[in-house]
Length: 292
Image (cartoon, rainbow, N blue to C red; front, side, top):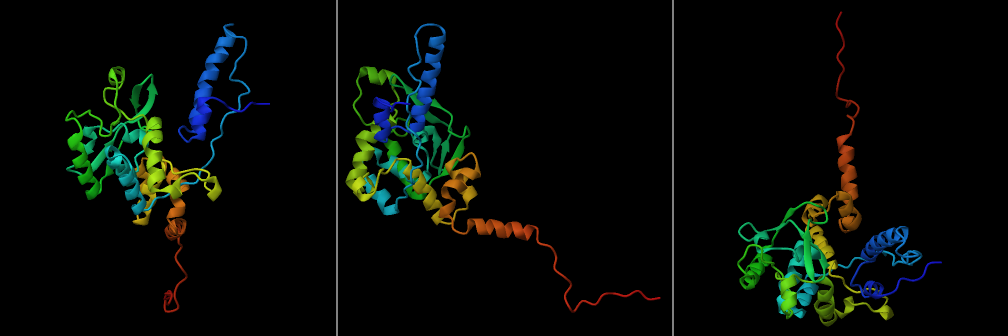
């Protein structure tokens, strides 16, 4: 019989600071190490065996209205206001937002060039890598967001590799040495800034079991919000796929197909038109007869 997962990782999953999938990956890596230690005779048994892990539950997506996005942006620390707006209007993942550099913001062409993501932290040092799909993409900017980003960049160092969104906290000498770019640590940021802003501006979006809300608004729901706004504007699903950086149109349809009513009917009609057979001759057509 497996035992419940315990410790700080389990509590962070319960607090919505870490996904169950991340804990499962950590467990897999640690279990592999301990299994080899058993084989080498370093330890007597693998302590990772028979440990009950948190399961990945498919949580209901939340979609904010434009007014709710504005309220959330107004409620958070002003240092992060443009971060909230950018998340909702571009649909970038948190890891992609935290890896954006000044060079990636193309204001003249109203584009964000997404080439990388903040993948992990090791002893206070951020590690950057490829995006989730492994491919880069260019995401359009609305004129309003372009103007907000232009204003925000005035406070960003002029170096092309300077991060667009940085931590506002006070760092000691060791932290500055480990994280000279002032990258945002998502877990701490959620706890110290995002969740308090949600509670202040959108209390109806917080977790409240008494009201039937087991979970509260996640930062990732801003990505879902972007998808819903695009589809409400009539964007086709393949355009949403490219905008969000999905590796497959299947992902886009599975997650957001219900927001595009009639999309399956339209596909079926187009498919039918492609294979439509010619109908029978009309009555006013007289067949030719041979003479002889």
